[in-house]
Each structure stands twice: as C-alpha cells, then as structure tokens.
Length: 262
Ligand SMILES: [Zn+2]
Image (cartoon, rainbow, N blue to C red):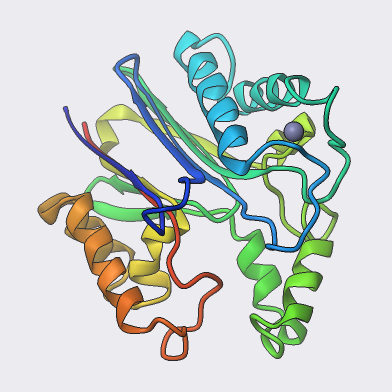
C-alpha cells in the first residue's frame, strides 16, 4: 500500500482550518473547517482550527474501532465535540464552527466511504475514476437567483440562510443528526485500486482553474504527488490575486489531499 498526505494553510501566517489524517488501522479523513465571515459572530469562543482538531481525531478513533457505521461514527464524534464546548458556547448559532467531511475505511474485504458537503472523494473503481460527491452545495450555488449575485455580500448572506437548513446543504456542526444526510457507501476492496480525498482548496485544480477533469486530477496526484498538485493551485492563485480571471470565495484556501493506492 502507498499513501501520500498533505494539508497546508492558504496563507503561511494563518492557522490551517483543514484536518487530514491517515490511520494504520485502515482509515483516512479530510475535514475542511468553514471559515466564518471576518465580521461575523459565531456564538463560539473557539477557533475553527480548534473545532476540526477535536472533531477529526474523535471521528478517526471511532472509525478505527470498526464497531459502528461511518455515519454513526460521525454522529458520535459531532456529539463528543459539541459536549466539549456546550457550556461556554451557543451551539444553536448558525455559524457555530462546522466542517465538511470525507471519511474512508478499509479492510481486506471492502472499502467504506462517507462524504458530507463539498470536500471530494475520487475512487479508482476497476480502472475508472469515480467521483463521490455530496452535490447539495453545488445545487444551491447553481440556482439562477444565486448565480446572478455570485460572491457578493448578498450571496454570502443567502448561503448562510441555507446552511444546515431544509432545502439547503449540510455540514458537520453541533447536531449529530446531520450525519444521516451524508453520502455513504461501500465497495469490494478488490474493485478499488486507489482513492483520493481532498478539500476544496485542492479540488480548485479542477473546479476553479480547470487544469483537467476529475480523472486528470487523480492521475496528476498519483503520478506527480500531492505537493505538485497544490503547488500548481498556488501558482494559479498567485497569478490571479484579485480573483477576476477565476472567481472564487477566497484568494488562497487551505488545501488537503490524502491519496491511497491499495
Ligand atoms: Zn466553542
């Protein structure tokens, strides 16, 4: 088995709000903490980095034990993380710290996965690169009324109102019930040759800068490594600092890649 793991902040002087991990017990994670607006209240005294570094290890430990589904592991990890700050923070606040999740677990028999929100899992299944996506955020941002005001203040306000709300999209925040909304599944281990889990700071390679499709991104990571792919994203970000050629939320974003070849 071969593995490649990279997780780097968007700016060198800022804390990384992603979390990436690989366990020798056969589990891997990528979490992407959601950055609140700079002037926004969150109801929480903690940072997004604090949140992902609580939720990530809690989820990984449960996944390693193999006595629960990945969705149940996520539900319990959310509950444990909520309990760690419910006495100091207002966890009912819409902007309470929250994260996207990709989880992967494997043994000799099968590969299990879970995807919640806009982090991406690519699986090489019998030689074909297969994206495992939670499309709900894309559905929301693709709505004509939101496309028309993309990346304006009103756009971000509208997105906030659809966060963890019916008809909107879901992230791992303080409510364990959200784990039931995750995209989950499993495949025979013999059919899965390799896997790549990524935060959207890395999938910009495809989704924002258009260097290639999912299969080309997968091949690039496999052939050149995660560092090379994120370097290419960073170069494209640096070449378009005011986000005019390639409209995007943040100029530079935290980027994480976990690549596994079984
Ligand atoms: Zn808190």
